[in-house]
Length: 103
Image (tube, rainbow, N blue to C red):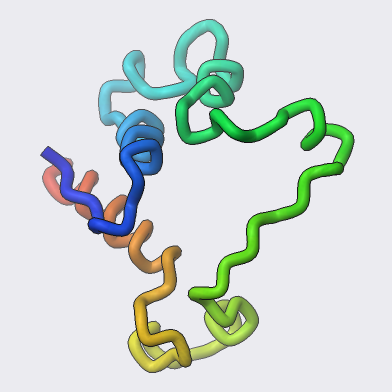
């Protein structure tokens, strides 16, 4: 079973497992409904897709990452200002764990 960081919600774990399922026919979004299946995921349950299409949804604020420094630095993530690893680093590790046993 895949292991995700404790900071991941069950919804985050669920969508990652679904999107990265190695069985292509079982992968989230691979059914006949495609993107609609992904949009109906519990991860997006509070997202108003109509408001998003009208560009009325503000992006969530993430105080954990100095985005500019994270994106444009050559320093390892552990040296960034944030005492915790940025969420994107956690996601990268989780995705790597999902695929570590593939050959």
